[in-house]
Length: 116
Image (cartoon, rainbow, N blue to C red; front, side, top):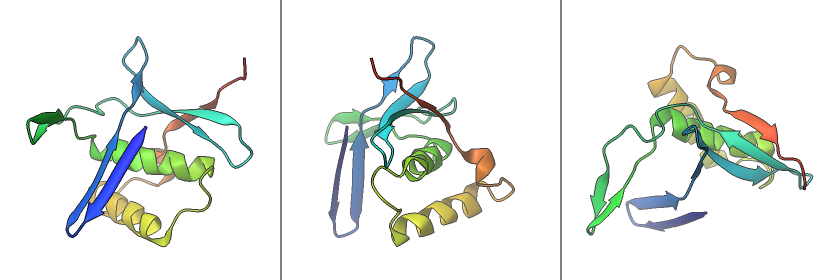
């Protein structure tokens, strides 16, 4: 589940993610053909301390998780091609925080979920 809002300088997105019993944080997303994929994020997703927003504790995902979430959405393609602002933001994030890493080395693990 993802809820987002923008208002002036505020650009907030709140998401809910699942965890496996082993602690792997993941989300599901359809691809352009309607197949469902599970996107596993790297360790350390929620290592940052919680933030307070009007007495609500929020966890901020790591920079790598932010990159991997966007990469997983783009890789699946279920929402169509990325918007120009998403491409620009993704490249800026990689250039600033992961300058020596290739985009491929930062991608999350994706596995197709078999229909039951």
